[in-house]
Image (tube, rainbow, N blue to C red; front, top):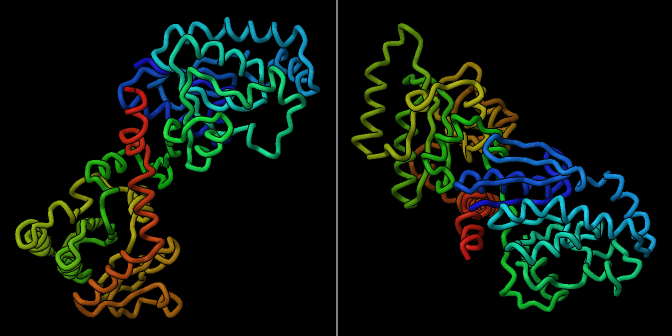
Length: 398
């Protein structure tokens, strides 16, 4: 579809509506729509969609400032009607081009009532979805000088030809009460989370994680270690298999897996690890030696720390013990075995395991924690791809 997104301001202006618009523009483009963002201030975050700047939409546009001064005093003059006409003429070509228009902000706020009126008139010509980010009609911080008269009354008057989109059940109720619309007729499309930006992932690692369906994983473990026998990587794999088998979950273990130093003579150990993963436990879809999957880098190591639920580090001998510190800084637990490298101050964040039963019990406890449950729920339900397929795509097709 050809989709236009409209708002006075756009990214990189800092604000909720601007961020959501940017992410929607990228999301819709990824799903094969042709997107134009029409705004007064902003720039494109991607070459995949078009951004067109209309100075008439800018909050600092001279005619807007003149009109706003009068409107804020409860008056309208020729500036208001002239500016409304100018806005209609500037926006009409985009409505003629589009299959659907997504309005963000200006439809339900009073900051530019001439633009609100222009958008309401144009909505009669093209299917329009109104994202209700802010809602003057229910915001006690706003006071309208003549709320029962035009143009201020537009804030309390529903438009018969648009679909109002609520970002939450709370906003859905507000819209329903104000416009006397059944709640079932007001779709709720929650604001999404761009997981890759939140975690600061490189594009290469982000793409690889998506291929591994990482948001579906119940637990994500990271083992930052060379492929050396003293790192007890085989024990980690055995413990992971016990957790998966006993708890019937979908875990992921990422082993950084940089090869040992020349002279380590650990080729047979690497082959043994590959045998455990592929043949003995059939864990190929759960255990990944990252160095065999990607060209690893310090940035990707840091990415692994960002997405991990646990640092799984059963090394039997360490001189430095950096993973224990990294886990503490990331505020995630470190599962280990007794090791002199574990400093006293790190004991509170380090769980020492002695057998498979300890690992199973630790996993079970973590899975039951409210913090972990909430995190996984948000990752699965509030990522943009899920929201698109469950909520946005049906609206576009309707």
